[in-house]
Image 1 (cartoon, one colour):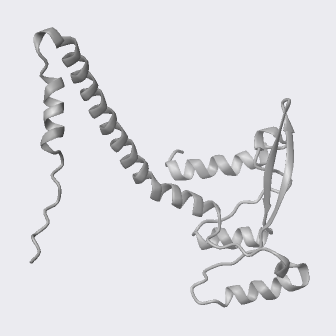
Image 2 (tube, one colour):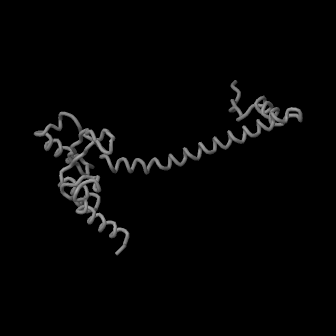
Image 3 (cartoon, helix red, strand yellow):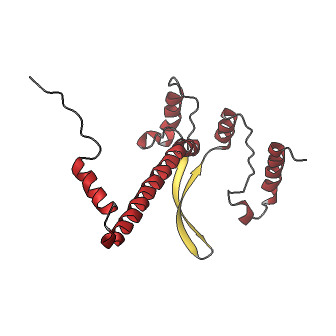
Amino acid sequence: MTADIKPAPPFSFWERSVAMRYLRAKRKNGGVALISTISFILIMLAVAILIIVMSVMNGFRSELLDRILGFNGHMHVTGAVLIEPERDLVLQRIRAIPGVVQAAPLVEAQALVQGRGQTSGAIVRGMTPADVRATAAQHGVTATIVDGLAHMLMLVPGWERAAEPLAQWIDGISGAS
């Protein structure tokens, strides 16, 4: 015959008695009671803050994943299979897979960047203009490609050529005239 096993309560009698002993100290030990009460309150606040921060960070998880996956593709194919003569065949096979919305070759390389007395590593990515336009069309927008300019527009001579379409686009989405 087996007895029903009950789960342990959150705090046993011994734990409660020790807590009460130090939280309700006698007058001669009043300092201990004050320190214990302050410690108890601060630990309670620290745990509450930890729970709140973890909840907020968990809420940002989906937003972060959307941002990361928006910048990076959902799948990357790398290696010897992408050697120049075979790349187009592999790309056709990938595009033929059911559920694949778009596939575009991407050149990625490491670079060393210097500027203002600092040196840093960077990853450089490149796509053909046709693939950039196809990606933009997939997202329902029109790509604007300004030849001869990189992403650091203000540092490149002739940046004004790219600033004008950008200003027009900003005016268009903000409704400014």
